Amino acid sequence: MDNGQWTIDNGRMASDELQKRILFIVNPISGIGRQKAVERLIEARLDKDRFNISIAYTNAPGHATDISRKAAADGVEIVVAVGGDGTVNETAAGLVDSETILAIVPAGSGNGLARHLKIPMNLKRAIDVINMGRILKIDTATMNDQLFVNVAGVGFDAAVAKKFALAGKRGFSTYLRITTNSYKQYEPKQYTLIIDGKVIKRRALLISFANSSQFGNNTSIDPSASVSDGYIDVCIVGKVPFWKTFFLGPLLFMKKFDQTKYVEIIHAKEVILKRKKGKNVHLDGDPKIMGKELTMKINPASLKVVVP
Image (cartoon, rainbow, N blue to C red; front, side, top):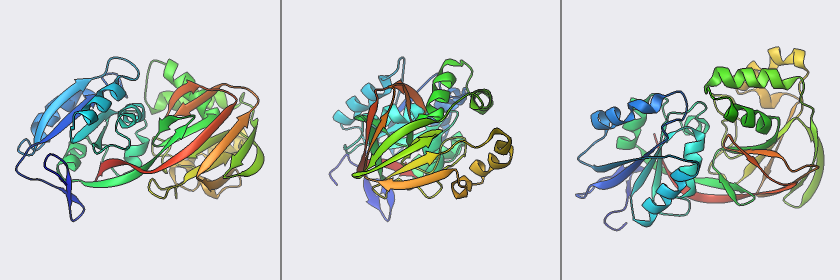
């Protein structure tokens, strides 16, 4: 590649005489405060002979996309999302189909995409990955033309995402409390799905559209999902009787929940979902309001990411 662009040497990023410009985008309110240590760790761990470092802080929803899009237009070689899945989503939105590479320092509460890509949750080791990592091209996807890189969904998990966003306190314990308190009352909904032209109808607790295997906090409904296979995995989940959740819930962490009768997984290039009411959805864990009809599409090999 031309000077000023990343190259690949045996699968790893190769350096040349020029420093590479690297921009860290930090969400100061993500997760449980782990991002506060990032400046110190960048100074201590990042190879300053190879990188010309800048740091930017987000101050509003969508700000990370504005920053990353401008960085890509300016030819910055690598942009680092420091935060959770929401920060990764916003940062990636400005980099899709560009030459600029995304890196992730996971500092959120779920960190789904980072976990799928085997990026360490330890901040020091995550920065070490940037020093020594390789580049992987991954798929991205859209719901009604809005990007997601990890997982999007409708139904129960979208309702929980909305409550979690309003909870104030982040972290897995808050998410678990909201999920447990909401589960008994939530009634499955009727959906019509047009999957690559084939019409099916399902009554489901939730329907997730998975690009990766991770749903955050090391849980998985679809362990075999791949970010580089050119497909969205449509995960249709029925409601487990409440008394069974104590027995089947651990299967989410054991990556075996997909083996139960409550999960149906279909690979797709394009999906249209129709529901009775326009209401909650989530994109990489961030709640949104969308209409009765949703269209999901895959965009293969559209994002460059630093991985171990």
